[in-house]
Length: 248
Image (cartoon, rainbow, N blue to C red):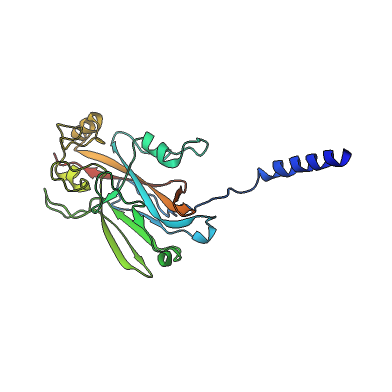
């Protein structure tokens, strides 16, 4: 009996000690060297060392974006590690939307936004650059918004990115970032009539008062799989915010 009590106590001690062990799954978040500010024209981050991932097969990066009136200063405090809700749920609840690509269609968005090959994933430190609305276009036509990077196996990669707003008018997947800058829908904020649901009346009002300026904030998240199909995501990394001008 005494021996049994000792074994039970020993098990309790080991169980208590196990609470301090690292999680079974861990995915290293992207590295951000310099956060974008309102004077920036791009967001950027680098590929981390995935040798530090634990039981997760890294697949690429997801991007989440949100527009703000330029009367506020985005802080990047939209994720709470003590909140039991997952990272996507938390960002969506704060008004963020996942970035899409030109090949995505409503209800069929490829995940992750930025797929990275295994060979490129092993290349620690290469930079991914996101250019939401390149300068130089002539209204109503603009240069394409893109993400780009140079990998060891893939070489230079440049892919068009778009907002997470279905383009019901042209039936051409999702709306471009330039469409809100050069051709905003100021009269109808709700689909399916072709409106821009992420643009509130308050944002439009602030933009019209302050020379049409709006802020664009963005997060990057490492994305991977545990097992063969279970999604796993890192904590989100705030890439900062930059200023766009809506030409009404």
